[in-house]
Image 1 (cartoon, rainbow, N blue to C red):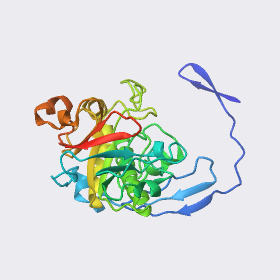
Image 2 (cartoon, rainbow, N blue to C red):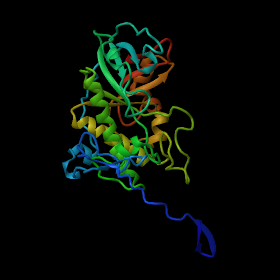
Image 3 (cartoon, rainbow, N blue to C red):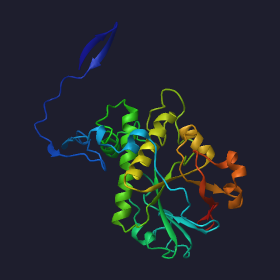
Image 4 (cartoon, helix red, strand yellow):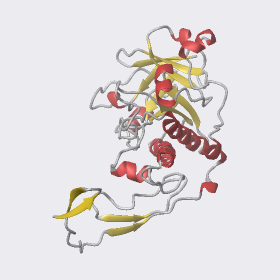
Length: 311
């Protein structure tokens, strides 16, 4: 150890280590509008990536403006009922799927972005007579140093991001997460063009408090503008691939995460105990609606499965 004098105090400084003669494997990648590049180096140092980010001018208009295109009419008729299912209904947890129903919504991810539901093929085949949709999970990559965050937040259509450029990372993450989920669902046989963005707080501590930890790793940051950028990018990616985007949340959670960001998309109101018509009624919009959108679905409290009613 050697010592360094800084502003009157002495700091210990480690002596230079011997140079590592093991050269990392160099992998040349080309980022696309669908999936971003890769980290400059893997965390274990064995791989070095040379990514190229697409120019921002190559982004579709929706990605630059944040204004999505979407259909005005609900894909389900008013009063239609059914269920949404995901990893809890995989055979490892619950081998019995709900009955065939008019509303059939299937999760794409296994609890986090950039994962695949293990039983997605089985669940997409469930309820052949129902009108299907998929839903995908969104969260924040800010502060994370996992390989997944380095891959999909630091590289993508917004460019190669600096560690403190949170908006750049947020846009790449949302864009790449949506396209990743589309690829998973399409490869598994999904035919529906409707995708819901799951934007919620799994626990009371899933959003950072204002202060020095705002941009530490957590489910969401305390900065609603950064969080809204993630959502905007996911919507833009879905729109660019001609998918119908909607948002699953509650007025309270959407407010805490995005500060009430107006996206003007269909909404799916999560987990309420009153009759669905209560939340569908425009007279109650100020109490239950969010994001500047109108409800297409209301999710009831679960019994064996999560029940849903169309508005």
